[in-house]
Image (cartoon, rainbow, N blue to C red; front, side):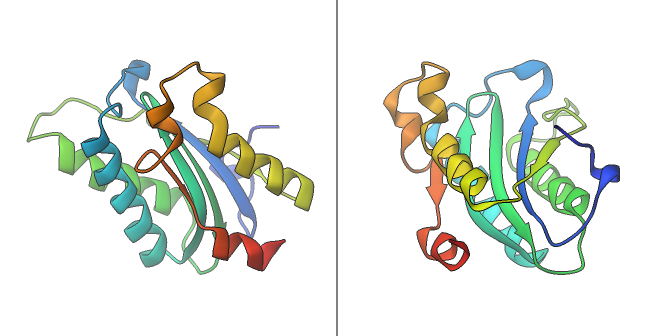
Length: 149
């Protein structure tokens, strides 16, 4: 079941998805993926979320994260979207991200492992080039994952 942010808040592991406006292919270059990856990593550290992994696809991203501090998931997502928009917008007033995001709570080890595999191989499901299966489009923190499983 997909939930909105208002539905629940706690120290859960979240699988988050957010899309670009009108699902446009804005995230297809290694340069943009690198920039977005840096924004994600810094924002997660600042807002006290453990980042297990992410994948950046041409028109959306997936994050696997765990709340570790006082900030809400909505604050993290607003930070990621806002900072990246400022990096790529060049002062244009055009909207880059869809205003909402979706998430699922990852509540058991099997779902956690399946979500990691989904992040690693999601590009194949979308029939995308192999470049989307490696850095900078995919990041997995195996050390953080081994603390969970």
